[in-house]
Amino acid sequence: MPEELVGAVSHYFGKPGVAGIELTAELKVGDTIHVLGHTSDFTQRIDSIQVEHESVDTASGGDSIGVKVAERVREHDQVFVVTAD
View 1 (cartoon, rainbow, N blue to C red):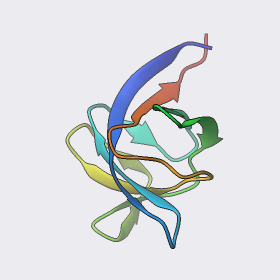
View 2: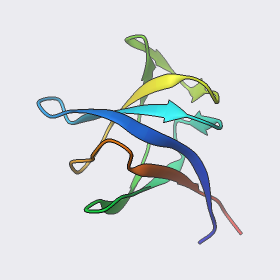
View 3: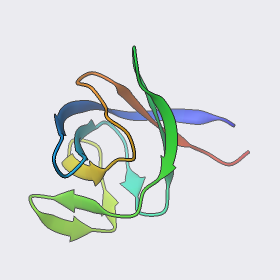
View 4: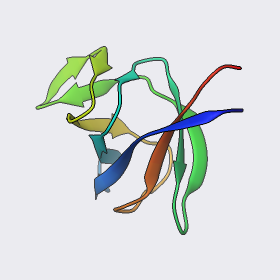
């Protein structure tokens, strides 16, 4: 599946399992992301996005967002959106 880089993990909040991501491109609820790093490599669907503790449907490049993640991520892990052929 083709992928497009949309950002990088800036922080991981362990207790709620949330990744702070600095976006470089648009990301929407319903998109599938692939998180890739030295010890991270998983794909998941985005169920919700938060900007400044407010739920949003779409976030743009330059936004700092929070996304609930299925696995632990680490700072500097790259975040890709999986695109359809």
